[in-house]
Length: 235
Image 1 (cartoon, helix red, strand yellow):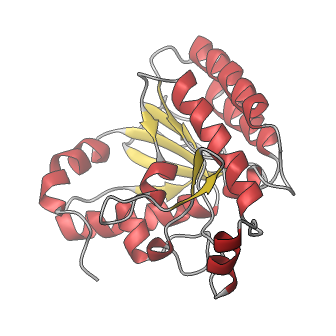
Image 2: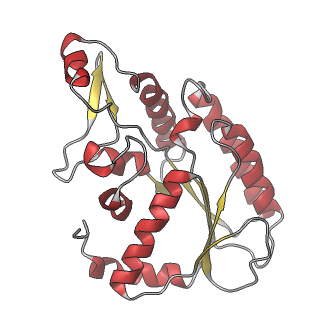
């Protein structure tokens, strides 16, 4: 598969990453992102030290250290674990850290209060900055789910009925809108924006009244939630 980007355009960015200490706290879609980054590293010839950690001492070498944080559907626990990890770093301090929630964290089976989740996350950033004032935090929107595949979805859209994914994507859209507003002007990994933006730059979305609710574009996924090779490299 051809890469969706010209890797040469991002070689200097990959070199910057190669010399930094980064903590990436995530779950399964995060692993998709790391697979894409590994492929871009291979294509560019810029070696990245990408390794999993679990409170183990990371020493002082550069690297992208990633951890499967907390449990899916329990986002408040993820925030607590992320905060503890950065308040008591093992090894040298990180230059940059990202907490990425899972689409399951905002769903009928997860948390259904998106603004309250942003509030909890915002409070954690204050605590982290108090203990790590030189750390650069990069915020992240929450990933989306794709419309269900098959013939039923277009019919439901035509007659104004919801699919089984709509309620979850509404929660995620509310969270993502609040994150963009609350942390405007700060670094943001907007994974929801890239997931919903088609190669044509059109947006994958459905209408709810006067509101457009983004969805994961089908071209970037094989199972409705995780990223395929194209989605991985774009992310």
